[in-house]
Image (tube, rainbow, N blue to C red):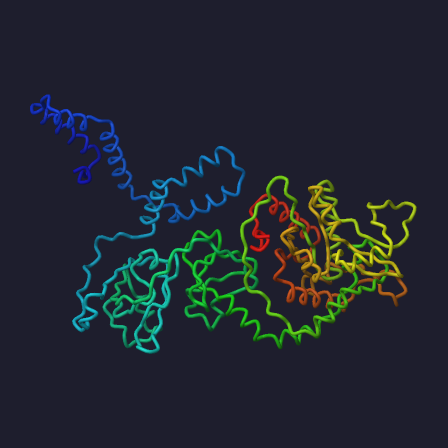
Amino acid sequence: MLCSSANPGSACRLLVTLLYGLESYMDATEDSSFLQDMLMGNTLHVLIKLHESLLRFAARRPTPIQDDAEGLAREVTEELRTSEARPEIVELLRLLSKPHVQDLLSVHDAVAQKDYDPKLPPLPPLPADVDEDEEDSIRIIRLVKSKEPLGATIKKDGSTGAIVVARIMRGGAADRSGLIHEGDKLREVNGVPVEDKRPEEIVPILAKSDGAVTFKVIPGSKKELEAEGTKIFVRTLFDYNPKEDPAIPCKDAGLEFRRGDVLQIVSQEDDTWWQARRHGDTNLRAGLIPSRQLQERRVALRRPEALFHAARVPKPSAAGLRRSFRLSRKDLRIQETQARWKKSQGLVAKSIPSYQDVVPYNRKPGDPYRLVLLVGPSGVGVSELKRKLLLSDPEHFCVPVPHTTRERRRHERDAVEYHFVSKHVFENDILNRKFVEYGEHWGNYYGTSVDSVRRVLAESKVCLLDVEAHAVKTLYTGEFKPYVVFVKPPAMQQLRLSRRKAKILSSRDETTPTRMFSDADFEDMINTAQAMENKYGYLFEKIIINDDLALAFTEIRAELARLEKETNWIPKTWAQA
């Protein structure tokens, strides 16, 4: 009765009339008392007021601000669970977890996402040529069409020739409807028989649909996927554009991403094409991405080309160790670095990983900061960026003290400029793999030890360390949780402009300690950076192009500040360690 009231206030007038008409029939019986209490009760009056408010609100035809309140609530909940357990946060988590709040958000999204058009024509009758064994199972399905894709792909069955639903994109319109499933056979689309058509001929039929799309389907035998108990997140280690992928089943169903994006994998049922959505994206519809197996097989097929480029890679410079060990105007004989480099040229290149399984991480008060590793070719400006970071906040940033076997000078203090040790101790530490990097100059060893890194982190400071790219793997553990920043040179023209007055350290056979950069130096810098990125790029979380030192410093300083305050994504193996 209340739902049939057309005008605000009519329900209240109806209630008053009802009470007035029943007054002469009221007696002292229990039933009369119950009816009177119910009609005069506060709960009924509140419901009437709510009903009338909804009628007034509906008359204004409001437009929803968003159609994914439920997904937003889930993201807020996940974010709050990683935050400090303050009373207001605990209270908000409790409210968001209540079933009636979740149901309210779900209903809101259902209304916001669908166009309930009462003028839709009636459903068509069943076709006359349906086999007897299919007559009871054929279904007629109508989906209201909106601007978003239906979220399903089709294919032609190789054995039967039938058009079947190949996959349902998680979170799409078809998935939300719950009416179409993978394996269903399509008989008609908007009254047009499709059994003798190719999949590409059916797409224009859907494109011409206006308002709603009607399908006649025979349910397949394929079972629906069970809901996943855990969420799977990956960091992408390559760029992907589905428009440029000739192998993808449907380009419009693909999900474009850049290297470093975090994706939530919502379906791995297909060994070749996974379904994923970008983390933090308000659009919950999943897209197709190449599976790990497919992508790494593609990379493996390109190995000969990779090996050809590896053979042309220049040998590593000593500058990486020089800046770490505080040496200048000297040439270092880098034993371990050169040995590893030569060995890598003689080995068959391994497949570069395509996705890295990651989990959210927030540093807890009292825990060590993440180690910050700066990587880049000689001359790109890694040392300058590290120095500017140190000067910007010497109480927060620190560098490890290197080891050496040379004699201590008068002005030097042990464990301040260097840790001065004997050659015997240093060589034993080399055998025990205690150094991140080490080298030798004029009969003396220089190196940065893993323990010196631990000392900085134990002081609740951010440890800054610039290393050769191969050394990143030594520290790539759950203990240090390194945040690897790759400093990359700009293009040749920008290098000529930004380094026109800069100098580089001379080699041993040159008469002056420093000299101006040459085009050969720039080419070597660019080629070395490309080789580093090709081989170790999957370890880099941040890439900064050092075209302007001040801008590069501002970018990395802001990134490190964000790293300490916001949720990070770290390899899943680190969280399990």
